[in-house]
Image (cartoon, rainbow, N blue to C red; front, side):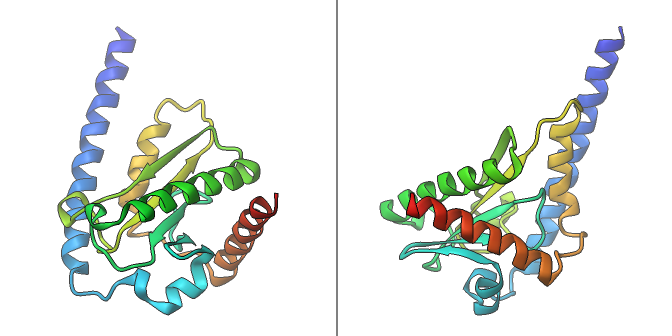
Length: 183
């Protein structure tokens, strides 16, 4: 009987979290429609970038859902995934693999989320193709997956990393990627 009750509670919490997340994404997207593109902003690129090639950039996000939450951003300004070239798609995949290798060495997560949103109806708040890499460590907490979903809601309320902490993350990621390129 207890296990059925726990399952009902978990499913109920999941539904509430998903409703709140989608409502917040919709509201956040409406508020951000007339904001200039963050990923075309030289200041954002300068402060968060740890990797760049001809097609993509790797950025540490200033409001991470988890430690070592990174973004892969297509350099060319395109809003939706179907607009990118095959070469850009391959470059995204190559950089995600590099990021994962570095983060595995630093943080040792057992799992990670790769997320890419297309359109305001699914919560895309920056209209520029980018992919989130969100690592997650092992947890005995059965509700841990819901905590990660909840972080998407709270992301909009949390304080950004300090400039010093963001610079530290960028430096560590940059060195990790460069070491892979030398190997």
